[in-house]
Length: 66
Ligand SMILES: [Zn+2]
Ligand SMILES: [Zn+2]
Image (tube, rainbow, N blue to C red):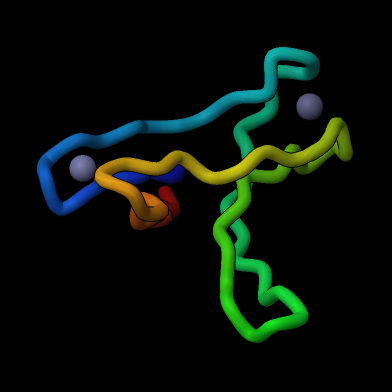
């Protein structure tokens, strides 16, 4: 499960695709201008969304593999 958190204490745990039910995978994409943006991608190819934001910036994603 991927947990998104902000330094203010806000957190989001496990985003799921409403279409297929799969958990979205977090990926950091580098844009042409060199900046990076976090996105959450459906592993089955339904699409991707902007990663959750809080306090004006991307929330930090941490992966828990178990
Ligand atoms: Zn999906
Ligand atoms: Zn925050």
